[in-house]
Length: 289
Ligand code: C2E
Ligand code: MG
Ligand code: MG
Ligand code: MG
Image (tube, rainbow, N blue to C red; front, side, top):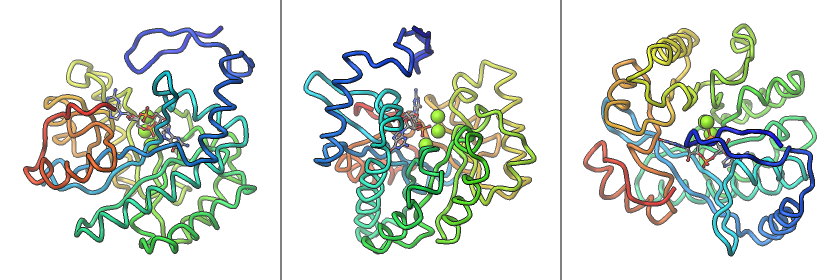
């Protein structure tokens, strides 16, 4: 068993990744049918410009609920990644997110949508470029309205193919974002070679930033590096007004976090756009994440 730190900071004990526990096998069976039947849903979490309050877009986050309750992405995404389900799951999320983005745009909201890509999608074997191209065409969304978020770690596993696939995706005109920046131990020199447009500073540096001098230093340095490379810099995980203000004053170009809104069901996201977002920076929502 390995100790893992959960988002709440509480240590939970989980079985090691390669262990086929009965729960894991049951989850896998259920996940396979959920992916096949389209039962994995998408929640949208807005990214806003902290200076103007304008909503720039939203990140699509996978959501899966079993009869006994929701399963966290931190549990089912790794399972999908290890079982070959990540390709059909990604295709479903991409398709749903672009359908959503097309509908926001038809309603007059000039928004982009972001979809997460697992490292396994960047091996050159998954046809991800064709998948993205097909989905963009199907929904009539301009390529520049789609951002693909890739974790630093994803590029370390297979840098040669990873970079090649990123260039192929960039060739479509989509935006590429380095997710969870600061956690992946990739060399800074490598970062300059990547065809990316956005850098997302990891939540671990943002949490309680107003109390932590080192997190302030790291976030400032990441923001400066991002801007020096001409990237759009996003901070994720702002939970309070103080954190939001701090990140705005630090010069982050956009902010995503519970303070702005939790990840929302598609219908709640539209309501939020029409109501709260119109007032600028809405306080945290009571909707479940
Ligand atoms: P991520 O891509 O870094 O997504 C941001 C995560 O931070 C989301 O967790 C979001 O709910 C959470 N978050 C945002 N603001 C706050 C905040 O203010 N406070 C706190 N405590 N959390 C905040 P979520 O939805 O549980 O997703 C976890 C991870 O699972 C994602 O991290 C991403 O790596 C992965 N994931 C989710 N959906 C997908 C997907 O469709 N495909 C792939 N490949 N990975 C996904
Ligand atoms: Mg992400
Ligand atoms: Mg992230
Ligand atoms: Mg993160």
